[in-house]
Length: 115
Image (tube, rainbow, N blue to C red; front, top):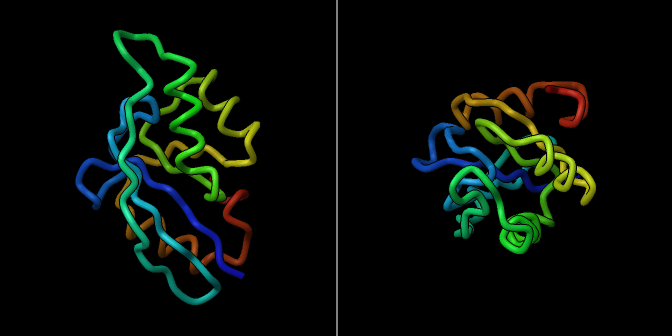
């Protein structure tokens, strides 16, 4: 069974963006044996001057609503609660995307239990 994962990354290589400040999410589809890049979704950052606008936060979450998880460098507690209320696992993991994907594929546990 396949599912999608979102990554907050400015360079497509490393998870290096705060959820509220990312300008894009890389979307990857994962199944039991492989993963593949699907697309880059451009985002209007919801954090402005150390606060976030509810409308922009809702739009960011809607943008990745078909994903099972979102990997970010950082995410605030309020945003995390809203992301997870929509059924998306928010995971702070400032690592190489490829390393994360290999761990997901090689793991015998569910992605939601990895981090």
